[in-house]
Length: 130
Image 1 (spheres, rainbow, N blue to C red):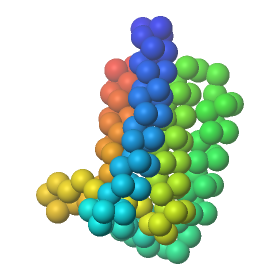
Image 2: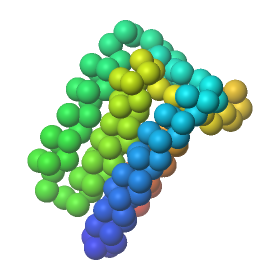
Image 3: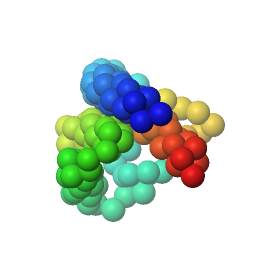
Image 4: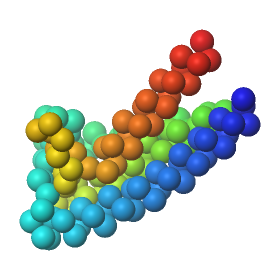
């Protein structure tokens, strides 16, 4: 079971890196084409004016926590970090995150989708290992 977690967690990190790259490329292309909604806030459009600072501190915290964590699930923390970094890069370039997927009136991007999927996987692990 532990070996499976290592494979899954490291694979999720690798996929997160690819998703992050795709999110940046799609954001750059779709923003320049006028095909995305620029979200200056964080989750659900909440705007604090400190989004870059909050995101940067959170990413650094997750990376440090992942480095200090000896268990293989640290790759899941690194996944959050790299996915958040892709949104941070776009935020710095455009002063907001490019949301290009719409579902039920909600707008989000590929990194957001994968962040939710990683959360679901972690929730599954917590329930399974209870």
